[in-house]
Image (cartoon, rainbow, N blue to C red; front, side):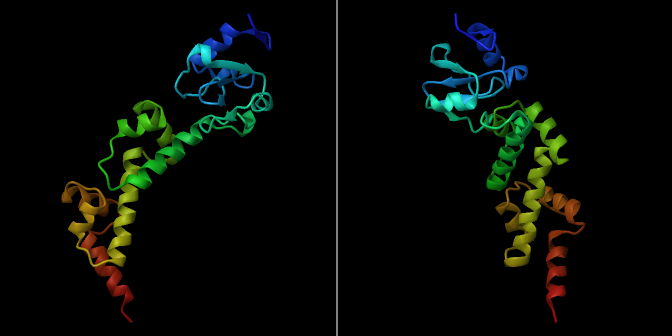
Amino acid sequence: MKILNNMSKEIMWEAVVTCDPKYDGEFLYAIKTTGIFCRPSCRSKIPKYKNVSFYTNAEEAQLAGYRPCKRCRPDLSLKNYDPLHSIIKDTKEIIENQYWKNIHLNDIAAKVGVSQFHLTRTFKNRTGYTPRLYLEKIRIRKAQELLMTTTLSSTEIGFQIGYQSMSSFYHAFKRHTGHSPRQFQADIKNNLKP
């Protein structure tokens, strides 16, 4: 039985399986099949026990030929590590890169590796918006850009930015800007006149 930092391999394995953050800084684990090493709290897919090796620190794991996980960043010190940062960053990227699609919260949550409840709570705590409201904000910002730079009708723009219903688009636009899309476009044209 291997002992590392006064812990048996079984204790370390249990910490990996339960993603226990209290063991962060005590050890790291590496996965032979992927060539990646992680913190015990990493929410990545649980590897097979036979493919796992344990290390005291990042340097030791890197010397053994492993590279750091991009999700849990075991190469950073604990004081510089924020496990929620990647969840927020990845969620924003998904929304900003796919705002015109019919995006569902459960799909976003699955892509970032957390539950819908955890994603909504964490995202709102960090950004002030739920993922749905953030999506709406991005869509309305894009609608404003299109209203200022194209000759598309507000109906065409509503569909182009992902709304299935024009009434939903108009209500969201008015909630964010205080104007209907048509009023917004008219105000822009009036302000551009010499």
